[in-house]
Image (cartoon, rainbow, N blue to C red; front, side):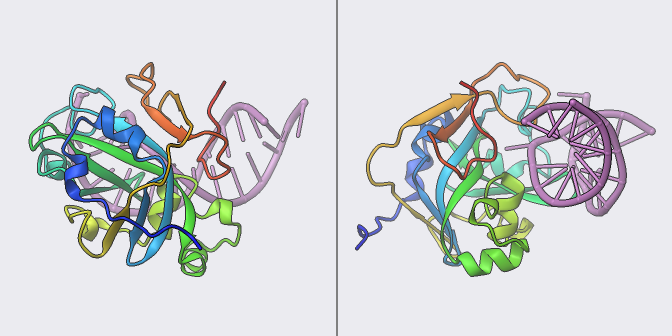
Length: 192
DNA sequence: ACCGCGATGCACT
DNA sequence: GTGCATCGCGGTG
């Protein structure tokens, strides 16, 4: 038997993304009952040249400037949908990019959506995760503690590793990528 | 293992 | 017109 799941309230996100991001490792995220445990995230804040919010509020990033505890979904490279959790207070425009999950719920649906069988390949990257969870722009702006989203607190305190963020060209020196140590479900290994 | 590249949409320092 | 908060494939070691 596994431990009962305890729901995460949106107030969890009303703090600096730099506090929230490492605490997201181990949290379970489901969309319409499908998803898994977060094993990798990245933090982006408003003074961050790599962040969508750096240039100020635009049509695309408006959700980042609104209430914490909501989803910010954007299209990446014209192909993928990527999921962020908005943090801090309205106007602070901070968000955590959810980069990888350990699949726990709805494996068969995720396999069908992804077109691959290997469990390790279902959610091991922000674009893969977006496809596995069936995300689109319609999910952007939705509250994380209301359907179709459901978040559950982690049990215990995981071992966390940090490193530089992936796939950016600016502010690459900031170690704002967080991962579950030793997880086989990461998008890429963390360098020692 | 690494490296290069095409796909594909759209925001835009 | 340029550049992505990506992925998967095909090439070379």
